[in-house]
Each structure stands twice: as C-alpha cells, then as structure tokens.
Image (cartoon, rainbow, N blue to C red; front, side, top):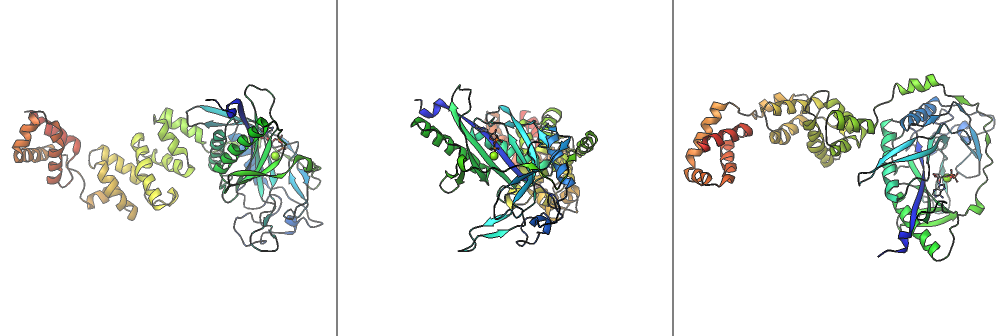
Amino acid sequence: MSSIYDKYETVVGLEVHAQLLTATKAYSNDLNEYGGLPNTNVSAITLGLPGTLPMHNAKVMEYAVRLGLAVNATIREENQYARKNYFYADLPKGYQITQDTTPVCNGGYITIKLPNGTEKNINLTRIHWEEDAGKSIHDQDPFDTLIDLNRAGTPLLEIVTEPDFSSSEEAYVYLNEVRKLLRYIGICDGNMEEGSMRCDANISVRLKGAEKLGRRTEVKNMNSMRNVQRAIDFEVKRQIDVLEAGGTISQDTRGFDPVTGETTMQRSKETANDYRYFPEPDLPPVFITQDYIASIKATMPLLPNQLFDKYVHELKLPEYDANVIIERKEFAMYFEQLILLTTNYKAASNWVMGPVKSYLNEYAIDIDKLTLTPQHIADMIAMTDANKINFNIANQQIMPALIATPSKTALQVATELNVIQESNADLLSELVTKVLAQYPEKVAEYKAGKMGLLGLFMGEVMKLSGGKADPKLTTQLLKQQLDN
Ligand code: ADP
Ligand code: MG
C-alpha cells in the first residue's frame, strides 16, 4: 500500500561548525580551551574594547587549508574577513568576524558509504572560517541568564553542503564521515556532545520528479548525529502533512527537542536579521599562496579512504576489516605500526578486530592507553605461524600476561607460562599411540564411520601434552595412525 509520504522526496543541506584545536583564539592570544573556569580566557580583544585590534591566527588558516585539501576543494588566494553585525548578550563585540563573499574554500566533496553498499559524493558549497560566540547559561540561576565568554572568539570552520542529501540516513553517515575526517587531519576533536562539532540542517520536501526545490526550514544547533537524523525525519513528515492538508511551508528557523523528538519554531524568516555584512576594517586580507598549500600538502596524513584502499587492494583484507580499522584514527595508526612488523596482514587484522578491540571495550580504554604493543602482537603472530603457540593460548594466556608486564617479550612470557607447544613429531606420535591404545572401542567406532570422535582423541592428546601439542600436527598424526 502506498502512502502519501511516498509521493515526496527529502532534500537536505547541512551546515557543520567545527571548533578548531588551536592553542589560542581566532583573533587574540586568549587560550582556546574547553572546561576552564567561566570568564577566565577573556582579554580586552575578545571583549572588543575600544582601541583593541584583532590579530590573524596562522593556525586557523593552516587548518582551513588542511581541510580544503582533504575534501578536494578549491582554496582561495585572497581571503577577506567580513564583519557580521548582530546584537546578542554572549557576543560582546556586537559583531562576529567571519567570511562572507570570499570563503576560504569552494567546491570539493565528501564521499559517503551507505549501509546498502552504495557510495555517494556529497558536494560542498563552501568552507569559511569564523569565530564562535560565548555561552548563555539559562539553567543555573533561577532569575538570571549567566554569560561565560571563554568560548567567545574561539575559531570555527563552517562546512556547508549543497542540498544533496535525500534521506536522514545519508545525513547521519555524512556527519560520521566529517567527524572522522576532522579527527584524522587533527583539526577538531569532533565531540558533538561537548559542542565542538555542531550541525544545522536545512530541510525541504518536494513531489518526486519535481525540479524546483521546496521551501525549506532550518533546524539549528543539534548536538548529536542521531538527533540530526531524528530532526530530519520529524521535519519531513511534518512538512508533508502541512502540504497534504493544503498548507504552505514557511521558511522558519526551528529547534529540536531530543526529549519529545519534535521540532518547534524559533523565529520566522520575516523577522530574520539583516547582518549588514561589510569587509572587516581591522584585519587586512590574508593571502594563501600555492607554495604554502604545497607545504601543507606535504604534511597531510593518509586519510581514511586512502587507508581503506590500501588495506583492500594492497593488503587484500576484506572490506569489512578495512572499515573497522579505519573508523578511529588511533586504531588505524596502531594497525599501521603493526603491519610494519608482520606480513601476515589477515592475522594482524584479526588480532586488532578481535582480542584487542574486545579488551578495549571491556575495560573502556582507548588504544593509546593499551600497554600491549604492536611488537607484542607481531611476535605472537610469528610464533603462531611457526606453530610454537596456538591462537587460543596467545589470546587467553600470553596477551593478558603481556598487558600486565609489557616490558617482557611474547617469547619470554610464553616460556615462563610453559606454553610453547610440542611440535616434535616423534614425541607427539608416541602420545597419539598411547591415546589410541587407551580407547580401543572408540577407535573401532571411528573406523566404522563415527568421524566426530577425532575431537575426543585430540582432546586426550592435548591433555597428555599439557596443552602444548600443535593441533595441526596432532590431527595429521591421529589420522595417519587411525587410517592404518
Ligand atoms: P543561509 O545563508 O540562509 O544559511 P544558504 O543558501 O547558505 O542559506 O544555504 C544553507 C544551506 O541550506 C545549504 O546547505 C544549502 O544546501 C541548503 N539549502 C538551500 N536550499 C535548500 C532547500 N530548498 N532544501 C534543503 N536545503 C536547502
Ligand atoms: Mg544557515
């Protein structure tokens, strides 16, 4: 049964604000840090007191170029600062220094991979730098709004997409991809809950096949990727309901309430601000030369999609493995070290996706806090491949011991634990003979076709060897003697 909702398609464009990990603010030497005591990182420049002048922060420019390179954007040579005027209590200067007609980047795209396996390029309209406002705190004092200006003047990059999303799921996957990219190039911690990455969603619907875009609403400042997805779902349904009831969409700015899952109107376009942009008189334009861009390019790390290609095409790992490894930069960097120390890449990915990841999850620690080193893992892989230990022993006994005493080598630990397995064929052969002699009836059953009994014999040989028998060789020897 088709519903009214099937007649329409979703159109979304996203604006992401990324707070930059610079040491100081965008236009002053005030520290740029999260969580300081309120109003401690606030100089006369941040306050915009008469007679003060803003300064250009070269790190902001560098970070913008890094991002521009990562998304294949065109990077502008002559960058003008613009003044955007509005009044708000947490904006002490009465204006924001941003970019207007000369965004540092135009064009470029970010590739998203959808759960159904398809890929899509989301085109970017522009990226520009600007400063953040302070924070108005409404919930700590019953009578007054409190103002913390520590955030005022901290640098942001705003990343604006074309209206290229046709579902809330695409928007969700995109945000995850943007966050990954920002973290890989080290310019933003991407923590939406702390507000260091924020998203506004522009949402409209139109009849399928229609060319003209529908009128849009803008949902502001959401602080989780799931909430962006929920807000889009809610808005799309709301807009279709309005249209189907014969109404029109008015171009409102709306807020999202995570508790009810609904959007509510904050202001309408009729009362929208006129920001009266003009070129910032206190800051001359900055120039980004091709030489400068080349120098930044030389310091760029491998990006997630480049690592993905390397793992799949050069190391021949399954796509699933590659995706898991690249999801977090720290994780990928650990793996990058590991594959310098072993050429058994599949074993390496099994180790990090299996025992390492489980350990990190179980103890809720990040991989940079893990005492088990890539060298430890490489040694365990080498010993396993040489049939000196088996994977279960490595995972269950050697790995915990190494985590507890990381100064030891895997070989030392394996020797101390007395788990280096017997692959001396003569010795094993004797054990096999002994076991088969113990179970004449079972041997007869095996010979009559009950092949599953092999496991029993195997277990007995293992017991006799104190867990040190090489399973592969044991199986071979068992079969040889049983088939005689
Ligand atoms: P503003 O300056 O009001 O934020 P922009 O023209 O810069 O407006 O657009 C902001 C965002 O809105 C962009 O991401 C753009 O792709 C998106 N957008 C524009 N029109 C629509 C529409 N009809 N439906 C959905 N998104 C839209
Ligand atoms: Mg906007």
